[in-house]
Image (tube, rainbow, N blue to C red):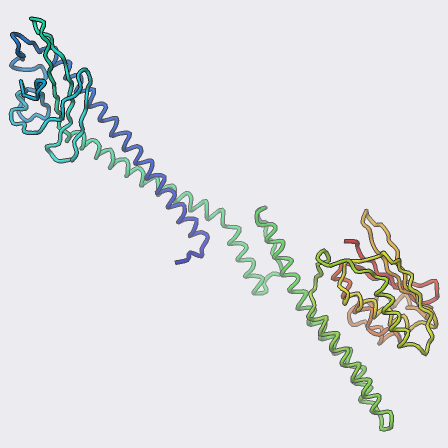
Length: 450
């Protein structure tokens, strides 16, 4: 099963972490407490050992023990505290009154001079802790004999104490786990609030209630929201581009359709029809290409394009088209000048602008370039000038606006300026119109150097 919710993933991970952490901590505490209880029991049995040893005597080669010991538990049958003394061969020499009914095998004898505590292997009611000690006893005649003293303690009090501790420990740990999960759940809800807000804003954008992401987001989400806003803006621009392209297409086809509608019968009818059909086909192809192109251009991924050969190619083609005008065209762009741009875009821009210049000129068209620096940024300028009538100052802004086609306002300008303006916007370039020293229009294209 795939968990798709980030909140569920974090909560599950935290639950497993808390369970593992508390489980390991509980195990460690349980072991530490058990060790502490067994150590305390061993110290208690050692105290009984020293008390027993204090009342033990050996005369005429045998042990002499008192009829009753100081601790009453040794004197009561099945009291839970027992004492047994064996010789070196394991033969029993004495046992306390409490051990009369004891029928439990003793642990192996301990080494002389060392205590040995043996824990029970089960938790039955007959389970016993055994503390054994080996001792060398010197008799009155100087003879040394080895004895083994065994003190036995019922394991039930220890088992009950450990069980009570475990129950209390896990109750507290369960309460701590619940509190930690509640706190972490609140923290996660607060921490994931920006993501929920982002989802709500995206839904509002989808339903048209707002245009962009406007919330104040944490630094970790700033790049995400910024890129989403760019994506939303580009998508909106693309939709607008399609709408504008359809409008441009409809507007561009008006003139050819009007010409076709107004054709009269005659030998030139077919030729005129063919010319207008070709023009309409070019317009449709051009507008469809514009509609399918990206609204933003990533110039860093493009190879530098040398401008002079491209300008020469366009001028040669236009000189053939307008051969009857015998245009004196000059290309003054330095050979090393290059620009990161798509060749088809530059062909479209320069082709439209040069075509307008050839149409508007009387006899001269110049293409040149230079570089300028504005606000510590380098810019490449491409100039296209002609010696025609120019573009009136009051019309310069209008011909660059959508719908303000120069072919409907000033003969000879076509649709080139608005088309060029749209393409240049994708390169963050600007198009300026002024008057040329030749007497006609001067078009300046300003590209930022990348």
